[in-house]
Amino acid sequence: MMTTSLDTFIKAELAGIGLTVSVPVVGGFQEMRISPQQAERYLALPHAVQAELLGFTEAEFAEYGNSCGTVFCESATSKGKACRNNVAGRTLLSPDEWKKCKAEGGYCSAHGGS
Ligand SMILES: [Zn+2]
Picture 1 (cartoon, helix red, strand yellow):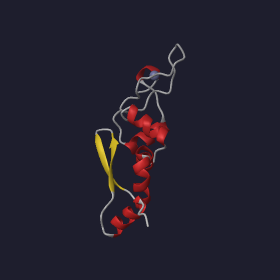
Picture 2 (cartoon, protein in one colour):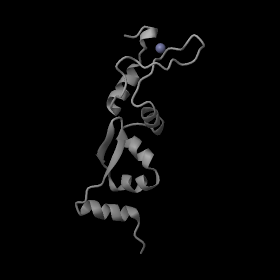
Picture 3 (tube, helix red, strand yellow):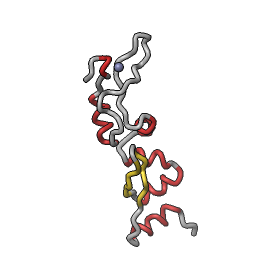
Picture 4 (cartoon, helix red, strand yellow):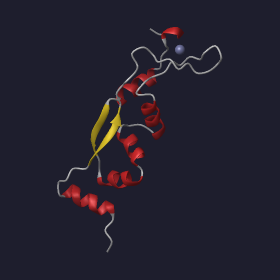
């Protein structure tokens, strides 16, 4: 009988071998515990599992990483493009802070923010 990677991860877990991954966040990595099922999926789709561990969709995880944890101004420039200034104090945020600040939204100093 062929042993699947899931079987191996389950055996490891039962033997007391902790399954952890290093998830990239702003300023470094966050060590996170994963289940045998997540470990198996991690082999094929590491980003999807990393996003899930942080409570992000994959798109949010990419946006978080690409912006270095920054929340941008919700306003538009005079040319109608999205303003790319950051909201004061909303850079280098942790995943949880970024989610909270992103939901709150906000504006840069040029568009009425603080
Ligand atoms: Zn702005």
